[in-house]
Image (cartoon, rainbow, N blue to C red; front, side, top):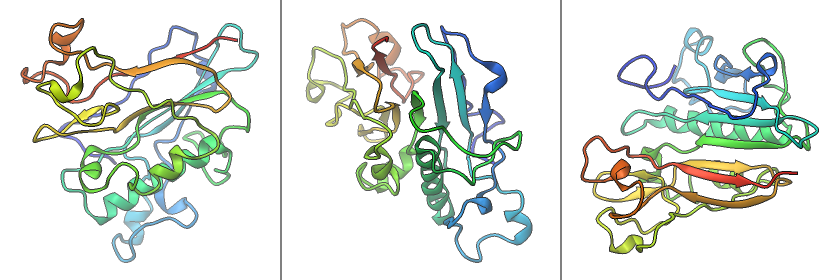
Length: 248
């Protein structure tokens, strides 16, 4: 129900040093858009038959509990990825907005309506330690909307359930002096014309203690530059975002 040039493009994967509690993993790939209360489905855009199969997530929403030493309960990785076609249409913008609302209500415990792919309802319990990770705004959206004006994104970042460490590029050379110049040190995604925007996030729960964070964006001559060299046509357009959480 998402976009891609082939099946599986923009797919997600989670690798963990800590054991995954596999029998408690929840996925929300099949949650129907029409089942979200007060949804933003454009009027007369889809037939009743189309709405009966149109999922809200363009990729999925995952809730993955981890067994972390020193933690009495599980730490949850909440992963998602928003995708849209080039030049998103009105329905795509509305869908992305409702996906961000779904994520916000899932982590805040307000998603009483949300059912997972096994039919279990609800979101995280209040006080559950979690880290929200993934793409929360499609790069094409961010070409149209400044980051602080993307519908439902600003309210998600400012919500009481999460904290935003604001990771910035870790480099000794100022971004403004580089070939891949980006005025925003928090940018994670390159765009045509040399611009870059922040579209990927790692957002921990408010109660977690953060040691450090950053965006992997080394300059020429620095460690790892060969992996992200903007002159290399095979270099990724997205940058890695990392976060160190203090143990209990």
